[in-house]
Length: 271
Image 1: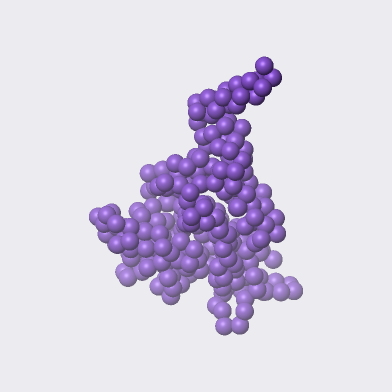
Image 2: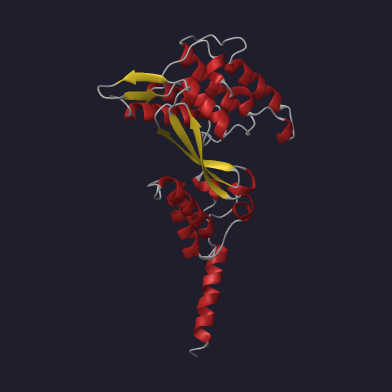
């Protein structure tokens, strides 16, 4: 009797797991494709925690690793995954936290299976030869990130992503706020982004589509004017991207996220 009881308990747990609905990556992150349908796995969460600890020195409160751990715990308790489960995409393509340097800042991008799930911008001193907007404080220079620089950061962190209509709308909103002109600049980043979105809508294969990097590389040089990113600028760009995304979500590491991160950084750097 005592030997049969553990077996019955295991079978009951398996039956509960079969009827439970897992928390998938698409439920907690605005990701697409195969990754969106995968249950959040404990091993994936552990890999993200390790990567965050290596870059930040600790797991970020409310960050991707914490979100993944919470979702994975729910899935494990429901019996839909085991403690040793890892998703195929994470195992094959990796769980990564990468740092990209831009003038006056470091962009930290967190990805699962090649899809961005989080982005942080941290300020750093300008080095000789870099361009940046400086406001002299009482004791030191404070770096302010411009809208153009935020767009260039997208080219570095999400440059391989095809341009979608939501991206084009966000880029246009960013250009309007950078230049102070409601008219789209001929040959500028907004017109290039809209053309790219239109082409991509008629293109089947992702490898043939125009990418964000094609449009936003050297964005500061393509803008006739530029300005420091503010909370008001970020709100306008976020709104434009949300309105034109069928999922009513912003792209992690995308235009809205980058301008919003730049605005937060600038607020934190007010002398």
